[in-house]
Amino acid sequence: MDSEAEHSLQSQPAGETGFGGSAALAMSRHGMIGRSDAFQRLVDRIGKIARTDACVLVEGETGVGKEISARAIHYLSERRSKPFVPLNCGAIPEALVEAELFGHVRGAYTDAKTARSGVIAQARGGTLFLDEVDALPWKGQVALLRFLQDRHYRPVGQSAELVSDARIIAATNRPLSELVEAGTFRSDLMYRLDILRLTIPALRERKSDIPLLAGHFLAVYCARYGQKPKSLHPASRSWLMHYAWPGNVRQLESVIHRNVLLCDGDEVLLDECAAQPCADTARDRTSFQRAKALAIAEFERSYLLQLLEETRGSVSAAARLACKERRTLGKLLKKYGIGQRTGTAGLPG
Image (cartoon, rainbow, N blue to C red; front, top):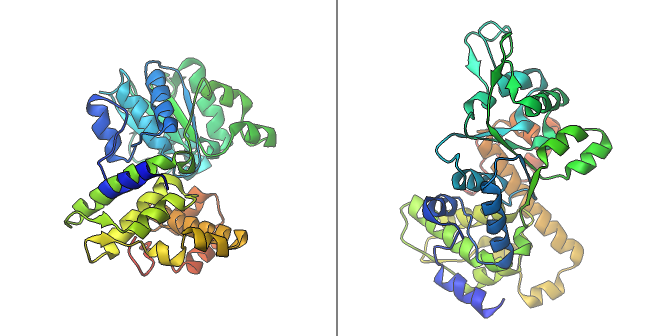
């Protein structure tokens, strides 16, 4: 670890967002913090995109912060006083996709007891964030493309057309071009969405930001649980800088959160230091396959916990979000001893 990064971890500053005004506070709350060149390039790109109204395609691995980057674009734009409406496309049943997007009138279908506005209407004047747009059912792709062509839409069961000027920001963790080649995503929709592109760097590409992020999450969770401020043990600082972080910022937050809950003293010694030593000597003794297996296991466990938190313990909903069969996801939950309704795994985190 370089000395500057080591010093940053020891002092645990609140961090820097690279944004100004009210946007800075909003971004820091969500862990969008950094000083690295990669982070500064990201901030500069977000600033340029925020000055426009065009569609944006946000790319990046799971856990890098695609939604908070989309929120940054919204907060920095002229639309900041209007709604930011997020929608996870992977959680929409194909039969309901048009109603979710455009809303429906009362009696449009069996369960439509009352009229309901869709996300397109809810985001009027603001921003609609389509997370996991790669998972949008084919029927939804057709409907979204039709809307993007002229901004007109019809709620399900209604004959009159409505108009919405919602800005569309879509996110994916898979290259849409590959899905187009595979025949699962429409090329014309990809071109409509990919006017401006924002690529979020993985945490391993901005390692000098890890000290700031770790310090931020440490302060956040100590405050949340009414604990006095804690510091990181030197072994913890070393482990944080050497770990590969396959789950990116989300995984880092999960690790800090869990260890704040488990720490009884003033200094946090990460459980992971014992389970996955990262000192140079330990790396020399650990085979590539073993290190890879450990990294995958940590990512899978962290990812599963996050899924169940988002779906309030529903395995069926979690399976849909993960694009996995329910039985397959159930086996993974059992493998890591994670409770299917509470999302707990013996130890908090």
